[in-house]
Length: 495
Image (tube, rainbow, N blue to C red; front, side, top):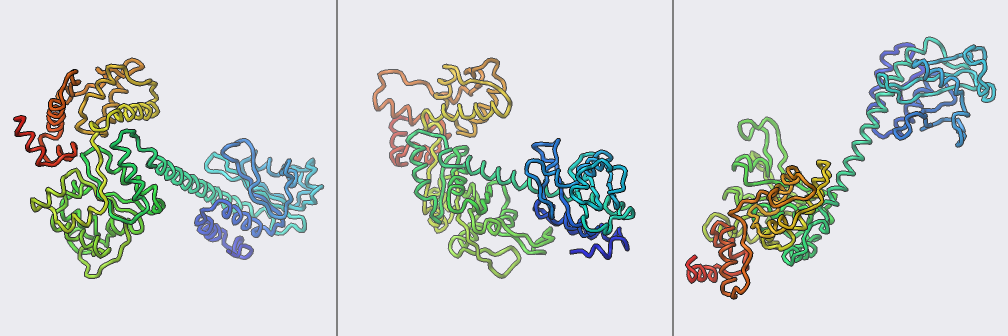
């Protein structure tokens, strides 16, 4: 605690500076107000005091936040001290100090002064520019202490610093509360029950997610672009015992090899041109939590070796360092590639593939999720109605038919973009097929009645081949058939 009794009059500027450094390091608003009151009391050797603050929910009334030696009346706490002194200070917007209050004409009619046996009193308005924040009230019932006119400049400067500290603490509190709220929103958003889908394919995904949530096993999520692989990765993290730990995501497909190495593992200062300081890698940032590696199939052979070491030894080595660092992370990887085929063709290490492929979750394409497309579309309508202050009620019958018959090559991501655009362009209260602007080349015709099972199989295979740009592996995976069966049918049907 600063020795105010000695320093204030001797060097008021240094005292204000020292006090400012002290109170501006306190972020807890209650602790800060107590410290401010202690400083005010010690400064003038007062026996009693209060800090009053205008609350956000009731900006017209002062609320007693902290008090010393004053028994506040719960019905009217301001009756316990000189309200006249407070009113005068707030009205003038300046510090009011009365060192002989019984003979002060300004307060000759104040009954509280006689009732409380007040000898000297002061009130320091707290303001940020022209905005009132509150006030500090102090008085003495024993002696005049240091209630002197020459104290007024110091008390005014102190009040200014106190107001700044209070505003900073309130801002810190709001930011902390908002971050907590955003975390709760993120957890709610990523709750398993928040994943939309009643189709058999999505229910299988959710059952798999529930069964592995609280294991430390590595999870590999497979699926086309836009199917929601990162959403499932976040659901695995934010519904698990690691939910309060870091969740770090890295999109591997967009970074060159050297930059990806630095991002993943970090580097030592001077390790390469531009390495001006030590840098912690994303694996270290995720320590204790979950690391999501998106598009793992795109990493180079060199990075594959380093990643294999992480999975085997749970340690990393920064670029330019010789020593290793232990890490404790749960790894979730995702890719839209057929990693088994990548292994067969020599582009992906077999040992790394088996290390990643402990638990596999296959994300179904949107075209294989039936009426989930309607559920998702309605969800996006509600989302963008709120965002853009619109009042679209839903979809016309022809729009629903279009949503169902479109193959959605971009999956859920394409659907969301489509609904956002349609909602903004729609003229009426319902989105029509015309509003959707779906590409004719991806419309799947409705099957005519009387199709045989053979004709139906041929139709489905044709549509899936078109959707995957004739990628045999992806088509076989989507249809849940072997590549050998698919090759045989393609030859048989001359596709």
